[in-house]
Length: 301
Image 1: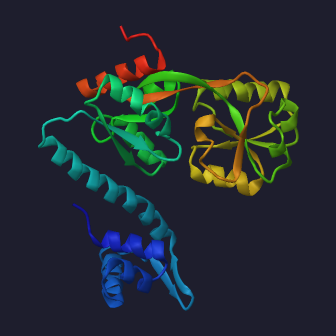
Image 2: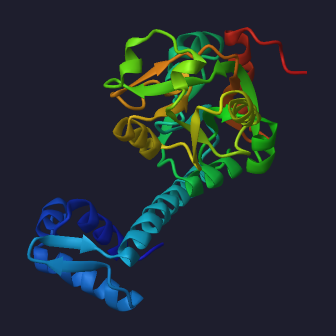
């Protein structure tokens, strides 16, 4: 369904050399080199610069690397969807997981869910958390992934063309490096953020973070807000490397081992729950109602 030379290209990029890639692909180094040469020739692109120190990806190579991983993953999942279409629907809930979309709290509820619905099974589906993947997955919930846990508001659900089951209102906290002096505190005051860089997601992502942004601008101008576009692992790395502070919620506390998530003495919260298709299957509907019972929410009318 796609050029198999793309898989060789990705392996070479990940390994940084033809020899290492050949070992993992169980083919000879000349065969790897030939495939890369053919791929470069067919695409009329230069993907690597060969130096005596090793391979360096060109800008074209970096661009293709990003898109090729998505293409291969999507093609593989399309095959899985086709196979699933040939089989009778099972009581399987496919949970999408990534560092930013934790599924652990569902695992913690598994015993209670299983007691009410012993026929329901979980299947974890990992995915790379990129803006492109997030939009595609949320828009197509129910096709390959049924449920994704995440933060949302009404505008988010409308723009992503999905629905959400609200489970909690999560306080906005601050993630700080364990080497930051603030990490010694149990709770931060707003004044602790003065003269610090506070990484806050772009305006329009969530109404609650927008209100926090407005509050900071109006009442706490000594806090320097740093905008970012998308919450992923690189943002957590940036927080740790720069020693800046990062907006966070408890559900993301285990994303980065060198960051500590601390409460702040403000009253800003984000809706958190299960994202699903606006038209869920009977199995997913049953699962959502079961979750409602387990967490003590009223039945959906």
